[in-house]
Length: 212
Ligand code: C5P
Image 1 (spheres, protein in one colour):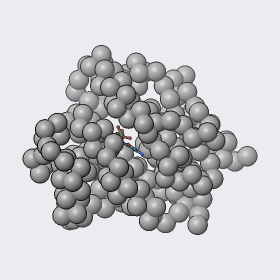
Image 2 (cartoon, helix red, strand yellow; image 1 turned 120 degrees about the vertical axis):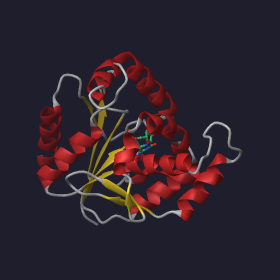
Image 3 (cartoon, protein in one colour; image 1 turned 120 degrees about the horizontal axis):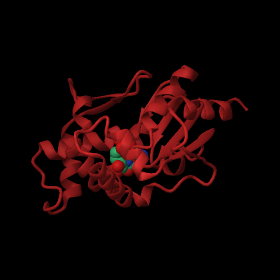
């Protein structure tokens, strides 16, 4: 099996951009695990499931996952997600999905479904998410964990969402709380505070550690 580098971290810590940059410098793809959780959430919402009211929501979500074929295409230039012949990537970064995804992501059988898809991908790649270095690829060759203060993350994310910075900050903090179970860094991960660094600074730091 080829090299696997894991880059985990809290919501809006810059994981996708950093992973994309590291992967293209290495000439390998990156894999955004969050997109699969987002895609499962989109299917649930499109099926009309009420994420707060549905009795046995997990079974209903599993049924949607069984009825549709979701495929993650881990391109170096940006991951894409397909539902059959329909590309759904653009729909996965809405505020509605941001709000619902943590409810779906705590479900053990949804996590098992995501993990199976990820482990079936051919290495080498950079894997990005919350638990890549802990649960999914504990054997990875190098592990990183990105953090930044909620305010800095909200300021960055404000460029991609219509809400104002305090609303985004509140939503990010809430998502961190809901994701708490899966956001502990691996004991052997290098934790990087991205606050004082720009995107290229984080990429260069990771590449310098990989070169050692
Ligand atoms: O990374 P991204 O913000 O796209 O992830 C969306 C959501 O998917 C997270 O808030 C979390 O609930 C879930 N997730 C997860 N485990 C991962 C990646 C994402 O639980 N490895």
